Image 1 (tube, rainbow, N blue to C red):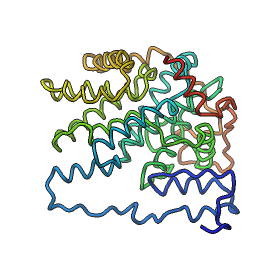
Image 2 (cartoon, helix red, strand yellow; image 1 turned 90 degrees about the vertical axis):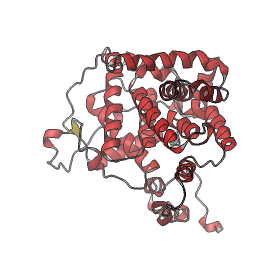
Image 3 (cartoon, one colour; image 1 turned 45 degrees about the horizontal axis):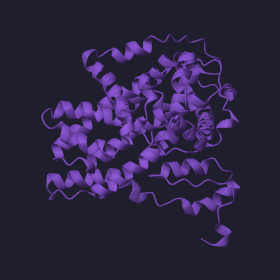
Image 4 (cartoon, helix red, strand yellow; image 1 turned 180 degrees about the horizontal axis):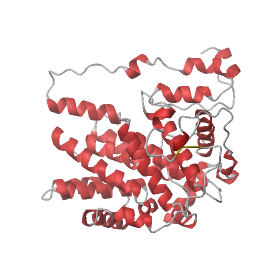
Length: 375
């Protein structure tokens, strides 16, 4: 890169797994600054066209390669080291301390439940990756925890949910659904593209453009790909079952008090116990040695909540429904689903409702504060 091609100061360069997020960053800068960024946009062809697998390989090898492609790590030692790195940075990608109390005091528990439920259903409908679900929910929680909005309304939570899923898709997916496709089902309001894009920018600013979150799924990918050695069919079944448990966990606001590593290991414990009742302790011991022993009590408590789901499938919904949530009427600047076919050119939504305090500008400060509280 020549001297004239250097990135102007103030531009944040973020490495992503796909071209869509590079394009997202690119679009938010004025044209005069875009030229310097063009050299950063990699060739999209090889990213969106993976090589055809060699079907002559046996099932085990194909399964292992798939796991390695997903996790980027090729040995057990690499995965364990990556696990430790995730543990070190997970606190900086969690909601602000006191988030659970914040949800309850703002009557947002059931609103969050509905939002996460919509994220899961929409990702399933559009065949998006599981990682997109967990990243979307992470962005939602982090934004809710820093926002100083005094009166959350139903349309505001829906707009935030759409923006979270749109950003997560651009960061994770190689093929994007349109904003209209995201809003096709299960929402009470429909938003114009310009409104969603404004909300996306507000979301990115609130998250400080830090989108490579450490989520519960980050640990599951590492553990199931290399740290636990299983035959291909068992590995696939373990991943499927534990993913279902973690999606259920995303809906339960009580688990928000625990770090992602605690929730992930608790879900693995429940799943291993179900799939391998006679030998699950062997696998569990392998996993437990990777974490701080101070978290053992939290893992037991978290697992106890998950076990309650097996007894009462509606347990999560009942817990969320205990927190009433009143939805005031929506502003005229938001389209109701009844009017989704009507195009309003001068539609504007006042996003000043979503106030973000400047005191959260340093992402490391909240992580340090959380660690002090843990101690």
